[in-house]
Length: 328
Image (cartoon, rainbow, N blue to C red; front, side):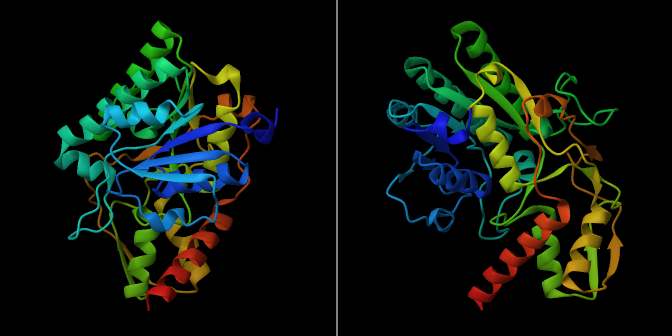
């Protein structure tokens, strides 16, 4: 079954839809002729991400912890992509880092991840709406073996990972107890245009300020599974259209390990700069040395990422440079 035939006539709610991944998902859903509602409190997302010329898009500024509001929107929805989480922006620090913020404010992180998810589950229980719960590889924590299978015991090393793990537990309970159609999708390191934080964006900011010297946290040997945002979004939609995936937990990544050093090398090569790169050897609490997905389950349903890392970085850089030109 194609995306378009499955999604035709569907009304879709995207929580956290003004954020980086959420807005890219909204854009793809609109291209597939869906009616899309976005719920976002704009603590991290920005309305600029939703500047699509479409009568099929509606935006509601509100919090996923507001049950009455979630219930009202769910009554109008066939499918819910639940991405909302606690990543507040601050005037002092700019766009928030989800793990660092969860360390500072674990109660708020828990409240959004768990109570927010429970609100979505309770509302959907009444309407039988399908739910795609977007979780994170952070639930795995420090594992001894990579690539990481979905059956790997969870051992989160941050409040963010712990709260997402708890939210996953509720999703599994609602699926088993109430037969609610829920898919848990664990995203690995998504990157691309509209991402205004994390490794690649921060590296571009540093090189813009000083193309001669670049200081990076850690050893540079940390390995991640980087997946381009358009591939991640396509994976989410593909899973939502697959009946057999409901009740399942799936990794969403490429299965390809890439070190921080390799990312830095690719970025500097594309930019045509040769900075003196220094690694501090130190990192933040909760940082993990290696997170790479086992994507065997994903491949079985026919998903293969289209974008190579270099292609994705080139597109990210083009977007970054355009945004900077507009500001200046």
